[in-house]
Image 1 (tube, one colour):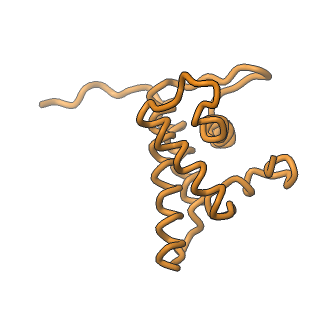
Image 2 (cartoon, rainbow, N blue to C red):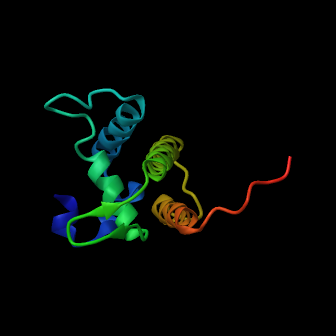
Length: 128
C-alpha cells in the first residue's frame, strides 16, 4: 500500500520504512529463508516475496507483461541480500548510526550485480 500511495520504489527500501514495517518484513525474510510458514493461508512472506520480485525487476530482471524470468539461485541470493540489508538497517537504528550510503542504494546496486552476473555466460572452469 505504501508503494502505491507514494508512487515510488524508494518508499519500500529499508531506510524508508518505519520501525514496525521494517521489523515485520525482516521477520518475513527470515521465515522465507528458513522455509517456515510457506504452506499456510497466512503465509509469512506475504510482503517480503513480492517486494523481492519487484526490486529484482527494478534491478533489471527479465520480465514481460505478466511473466518474470529469474533463476531460483538468483532469487535465493536476492532473498539473502535483502534479509541482510534489512537486518543491517535494524542494527543501524538500534545503534543510532547511519551508513555513508543509504541501505537502499547499496541494496539496489547488489541486486543489479546479481542480475548482471546471471546474464553473463559462464567462463570455462578454472584450472585446479
